[in-house]
Amino acid sequence: MNLIIEGVKQAFLLLLEGDSELIQITLLSIKVSGSAVLISMSIGIPLGLLIALSDFPGRRLAVALINTGMGFPPVVVGLAVAMFLWRSGPLGFLNILYTPVAMVAAQVIIAFPIIAGLTLAAIQQLDPRLSLQALALGASRFQVLLTLIREARLATLAAIMAGFGGVISEVGAVMMVGGNIKGQTRVLTTATVMEVRMGHFAMAIALSIILMSLVFAVNYLLTTIQQKGETPWITHIWK
Amino acid sequence: MKNLFKKSIVILIALLMGFQLFLVGCTSKKEDKSKETEKKEPLTEIILATTTSTMDTGLLDELLPMFEEEENIRIKPVAVGTGEAIAMGQQGEADVLLVHARQSEDQFMADGYGSVRKDVMYNDFVIIGSEADSAGIKGLKSAMEALKKIAQKENVFISRGDDSGTHKKEKKLWEKAEITPSGDWYVQSGQGMGETIRITDQKQAYTLADRGTYLATKKSISLEILVEKDKDLLNPYGVIAVNPEKFPKVKNKEAMKFINWITSYDVQKFISTFGKDEYGQALFVPDSEEWKEKH
Image (tube, rainbow over the protein chains, first blue to last red):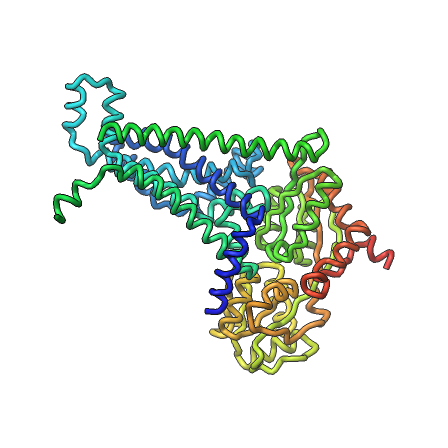
């Protein structure tokens, strides 16, 4: 118990000091996972929309693949990406192994099925007459899509939060494709594992606190956007 | 409702764009800084495959920046288990190796995977255990005898079990004692040295650890050094350049620069002092040809 209390105390001291390496690791985590989520959104949301709204041979297979992708072990993704990026691998000439670019790539592969799958489910849940109504009111095809996203915004924002949560907290893939190199590819999660391995519990706790605060802050922001004006359920049923 | 939602979308997009600008801003600031400190040529990067226990001593955190300053070559140290480090060399995925598994290194060279191998330094292993020491090995001069006693009494022994340099050393000691350890008392952690020590502490058992990791974790555990200074417990490090004839993509010129640098007298002198500040004793003993000539 003493060790834990000591650890938390020291962690706060470290945080107040504003250790420059700590700041650098945090910024890199934000950069890598932030970029990964943005890219995943631009792939995942349109993909989810597309599959939800169209019918084609093999559609069910596509949906099953995306849903499997949601639960795919990140460390397996990491291994696969690493093997592609090895010098002896097909994409070795890119020379991006052990760089943040490789980390973003791996995280995109982890996150976009999550965002696509949840968006897909969100759109499928909408009343199919909604698009008809929008068209009847004179909406263009693009405007119909926007209307659908707007109606499904609760679930879509949840999808983004799930995608972000999934990549900011994963350690296996970024460890394998990034290498946890000091000053270059060290992020909050890989740094925490390393500090624990070295027995520096105070540092590990400090990193954990930062990571959790970061996740909370981002999710608080997204939740605020998600929940704006959403109280009809509560007032009608519980009053 | 509609307006609120529109507003939130606008805010979100603005945030995303601002964020992207911030990301770009951060990266370019970093590049400007590094452009100032380095000469006008672009920095070459090479991959050094080494082990987690080497990395955890902190020696490389001090050495590598020194090397980068002097030679304008950036080293990317990838710290993995010994098995993986050597495998990386066998696939040409690394340019230079810094490992401590003599037999594997010799095999590596014999198979033609390495073009040059040099001795660098050594540290040593210790057998650690609880104060209670139920196997009664404290103070024994022979590591092999200590392991024999532990096996006889079937006291819990935690092995790395991961084909690391430490694990290979442990296996050699068992071989010398002509014992094949097996049974509930012989536990394989499959993890790094730090974690293995922690497991040993939890179970108040015995394990073989490198002195460096033991010293680094000493504060948070209750285990003590029971057996040390046996010749069998020496842990020599080798630095190997991956063979450019087998792997043309390997950056051999830079790898050789690193090898010559780390075995040079001045750097060896630095290595001999490393650890004195933090642990009161040096963690490594320099062992290169250049050093031995002058000592």
